[in-house]
Image (cartoon, rainbow, N blue to C red; front, side, top):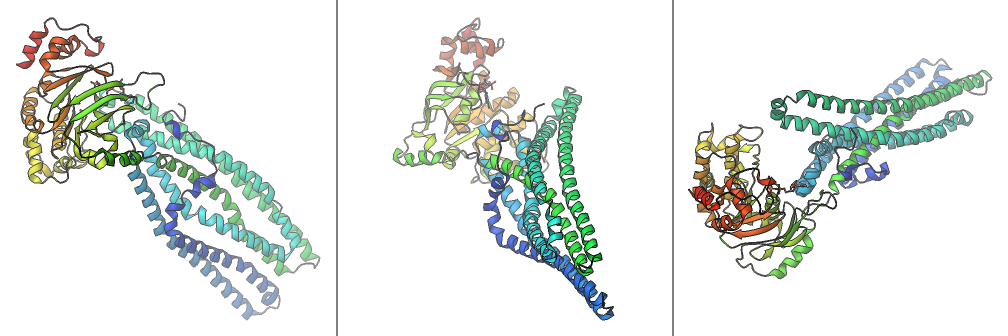
Length: 622
Ligand SMILES: Nc1ncnc2c1ncn2[C@@H]1O[C@H](COP(=O)(O)OP(=O)(O)OP(=O)(O)O)[C@@H](O)[C@H]1O
């Protein structure tokens, strides 16, 4: 499977500079910059303390040791112990200084991502697999915290330490110093080659983790289908294939890391070996004091870790740059309400709303990911639902009914024409106002991990207990909710009690009606109910419909009968509007859809009507 198979186009890696990617973290790091700088200062101090040790050694060897001064040796030993303790204590202090602020940076970034995801248009969520978003909010952010905790500080601290160490080495004995510094040029070249290769592998691995998360998520959500169709083996194969791909990428990363680690270890070690031989010859010739050689070599050894760690620090920095890219790929997508500002400015000119109901004028809609050249899903849709009227929307499967209902609450924005609520273009309404005017219930009801009452209250937070009970009664959900272990306070949703499809639909319907919305949009909200329950819900629903302007997608004649008029959607247009009776008489397609004979979506418009539409009408009205 290709690496990019599951990823939206925008997520395909593009070449970029890791430094530039990491610089984008600044707004989040800014609030804790003082702490981070303080911690870096403490780390420099700790490293500097470490570099003092060779100098004390030099004094110890050339002074008290050469003079066999026991008191001086004890003093030197004590000093070395103190320096060692101070170094360890300072590194501990650094760790303590950064732990809390970095946890808060990670939390702030995660909260920003979550807030942003909530504001992104539905079209974005259609395009992006959940696993990719999950991995950005979890593993990528952990990586970024790790980068801020270690590489960010230590690339700086180790750089300063290496520079200070080099200065000490050169002042001790510049010829030996040059021998030690000789590997720097090949090291820099090899590190940059490594960085380029590693960043490609890091990106691939992080994206593969996202794909794997998507697969696991789908397997868990679709466990019934997987078991029902005996697909567990195929699913396991897909999982194994992805884990193998990830394993191969991780091994590739490990090989790159091993290579650079090897180079970073071998070159300086060779240089230290060469300096040791040269230094020993110089001591033997009397050109160099033994103390200077000891100090020289211990400084070189003290620089081993700062040099060797560079490969590992570069690797984490690279992965973090990739994590930052992945994070900002999502954060850079403009939220749904970004485009509203100019429209809102125009809204002021609209004046006071006149009760005009819901009107669609020349509405065209094309899904953002529709193939180029495909006709729009909706085109030239004109429809007027008068104030207080209930309009049923009928059409063959795939004709665009759900799409049309999604346009009213602006889950998607029209790509042509306009939709008005009481004369006000929905594009000019603030989202909050639009949401309070329009309530929706979809065929596929989603409940959240909360109590039954809280789920209902999501449709109108200002409703009180009586409001919730009234909504439950309208949706005919009051009886089954009362029978739940803690009645309306029972936890439902994924982390709570599992409800049947019909029960979930009724709770979703209660959620739609609880806020007594001016406009109600229902997408076949009663499809999962048995005929008796459906009849009871419909009887209660009439009470709500009498006071709202409603658009209801209907597949069954019984639902159509809730409506004052019916609109027939065919081929992306409204081809007929009238009462149920009128349409039965005048539209063969409508009569066919209502008769329930044969597959509706295979019937061309205007063909294959029922044998006797009038009789069908009679039956449906009974
Ligand atoms: N997110 C999407 N991206 C691209 N195309 C989509 C998307 N959702 C639906 N479509 C396409 O839009 C067309 C209309 O779909 P829609 O769900 O609106 O039909 P419908 O009339 O509600 O069907 P049904 O009665 O089966 O629910 C279909 O061809 C479908 O493939």
